[in-house]
Length: 451
Image 1 (cartoon, rainbow, N blue to C red):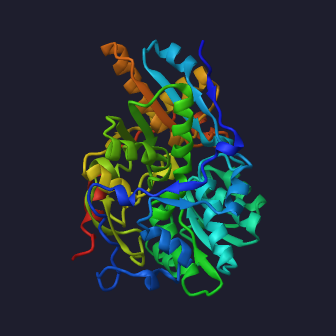
Image 2: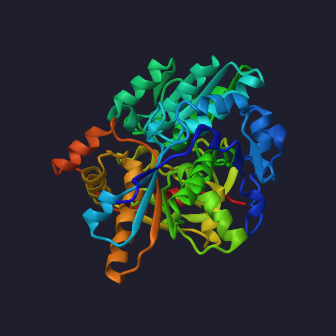
């Protein structure tokens, strides 16, 4: 049997992030001011972000050097391994070759520290004392809590309430790293109080939690806001995944015909896919790219491509993206990291230009794939990653039907060891599939900003 793991040496870790913006097929639509509707400039973002990250947000440099201080921390877990999933291939009896980049080896258990460490570094360098953020399933919140403790920053996390109760041990992780964690919507902000006044039992959403974290940060000179997905600079930092994967695929003597990743805000899919998309845009490669989302929150597959607020309270810049409406509150599926009403503008542009495809699944089909993967490969994946695995298995079975021997690469972006309540529900037959909430989406879309 061929090798099942492809590794890099520490000296082979990439020293620059890849910025896809110069290679886009069409220019990206600018973010707009929430009050004036006009394109925003760096001064508009200074209450929330350090200037270094604002400049990365709009940069047209193809590669941006990774600071040595960030590289040093990356070396705690990078390079991450690339695995050939021989056992899964055998279980599926497929001619497809399946590889996965395993980001679950980070101390926080996911891909999120790739940007959390970078954001904490740039904030510390510019004198920030405290960061606020939102988190869904807790993968992002725990990563930022860890990064803040590395750089001596305070951290406050607004955790979507349904996940706060579903995943208490992710909250414990954040608190172990010194963060303060509150369920969102909370009484700590006006945005949270407004939601609770209308619905005291609100399960929360990432849009609400973003509103709370931004409101907390904006008026304080010592505080900045930190976002775990969606924005350009966040996707930029994640491209170390794909840059490593390219070197590893070359060592394996292979190249992907299909690249797959789950999408909520878009960071882990982009981190793996963007360097390979560069090969398609600049070198004519024919690779397919599949973004996978939950049927309960299908922004790419069912949302409108238009300008919308990134948060529920309508305080964030307007972004051109696929959206279900900023007031939409998704059902409480266990893939909490995928419960966002919108999507990264860069991912949306590439979808609109037909560079990437998108599919959506119900969570029972997703957990069926997760269990299949766990029983073959041993690793228990996070519910978010399990969405990607569902698509990978479907593509592998299509290869079986056609006899084609395609190479499939996906991002295993986190482990599921703190998501066992979801597995309990699935194995006991208690996991609910939520139908596409058409009426709720239509109601939310009615509140789109008028331009």
